[in-house]
Length: 333
Image (cartoon, rainbow, N blue to C red; front, top):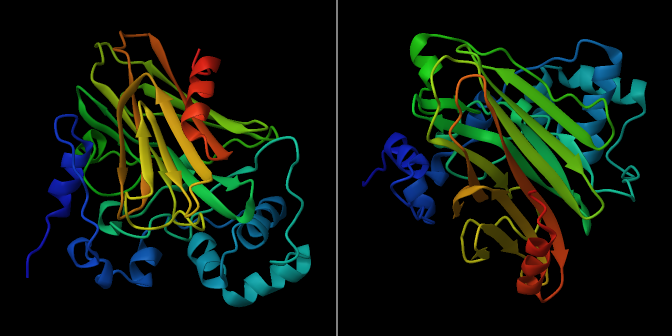
């Protein structure tokens, strides 16, 4: 049987020199061999250490994300009995759905426990939840996209950061182990994350929910004594949990300049994402996911650079006019 070398495939997808159109055949991507065992091995185990955190994460997983008890166990390490006991203690259930905010889109840290991809799982083992957030669809409160900010950062040093296990980063090769982090969620509707890498490169991710869109930004500070260049970033919008958008195909995707879009069957409800300054718009059908990947300007020692991103949900038949409207706003300035 013909086999794909997933390491080479993923490296090629990340490379700025090669554009890969990922195969859609289940046999080609090994979908038939993927099981819950892979899911269980793919997530970082994080047990809440306080009642406040336990209540927050349990409500997130049960009431908002619709996780099963098995998925909750994978994310937290709680036993089935512990989960049921905590549901009673905190009065948490899957229905009715809690009230969603009316002045902004709902964004939440992604809990882990359920792999955010459907396919190409070999290319994303042990996904780190601290880079991922959920943005819920305004027309379907049971559906959400999982956004990875960032999934990967490349530089002239090589693969400098990766939010899951697949190909080794420059720090993996040195034997450095990065600490587990969490989103700072102290301000309603905002998420903030800062990571300092072992060589003193520092990156931050910020997510701000608005009425009609989610504003994203990343900054990178060069704490090394050498200039950083070729600072390509992969930021991923995963569609597994967005009902009507989860087809493992690129047939429901559109590319308008740096904007990457996915539509439902009626072509009247759209998920739109964009990052600037833009490096490469693309989509991976087997995952399935959207990419509008940016690139930081070159960064001298002590210097900080910023990139900005956009995520929105559009209802209507005139999506080209919507993109023109977004461009006219100059949201990236």
